[in-house]
Image 1 (cartoon, rainbow, N blue to C red):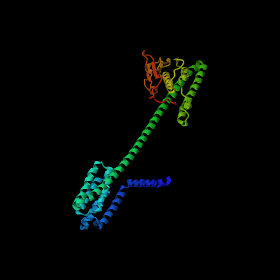
Image 2 (cartoon, one colour):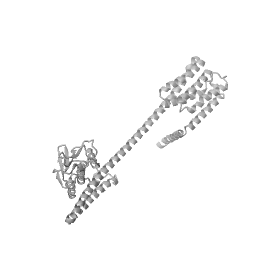
Image 3 (spheres, one colour):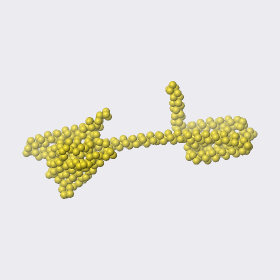
Image 4 (tube, one colour):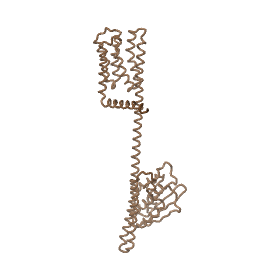
Length: 415
């Protein structure tokens, strides 16, 4: 039953949609057909039918034909210039009323009036009604006498109804356009959010790649250099260096596999943390041990038990320590020493990494330091780095609140 009642309306809607599409593609075709159709009807009326309603049936046929054409032909431009078309047609209607022809083609003024209500400001309707009132009021007062209202009032009601139809169609059209525009804006906003999310994801992945590859290659380089010097005097130490290089390389590969696994992991509802476990504060000891094997003496002051932080904040602490020691390996020189201190306060965790290298040999800016600041900012933390007050050595200091604000970025669930 429902199908039977809705099918006709669906077909009607499809037909209307097709007609509108055809009209939008070739407006001249519809305008020309409508104008020719009403012109033919006006000329048929001018052939003699006009005398049935005329107040003066003796008018010359030439005048009636001219007025009929003047009332019909301007319709071709009614959509582009409805006000001008109405003015031309009103002039012809005025002659028709004053002469007593009372041509029915004057009702074609409904069409430009409809388009004025549809496309022009509302105040334009007042001007249009003033134009329409003048001819019919003049004709009624001249020929109908005391019954003038019988000619004027019904006609004005018809004009008002046409104007209301135009206003209604306009309101529905504007409402539909508003919905379409809103949907388009929402789609644009969603696209922007997707692009921003993708850019943020690329930034995080690039930051992790930098930390993983940069640190492990620096450790491997230090181990290789130490092994080369030890090969001539202590083959056992050279073998230990090679073993450490292999271990470090495997660790780097494992971290890279976890990182790249995030890019190809299916969205199967499995928690991201379960697929890609991240370094935590518990892994600091193994990090420091690897750096020591690379040839950098590192002293550590870590509290027991370790402070409690969210997983993402723990990863931030780990990466900052890793990047700081990597910079020391690269730039501080062979005689440098490093110290890592981690202290838990009532409202924040303070991490300090210092070394004894030459400040002039350590860059003050770069992708690594920028990445550390970005990590700290994700959890309402701050990061300061610069030379020590003594003039010798470099210090990186990270402060991470123990309870990040809700406005902070969500926990990182992948490398």
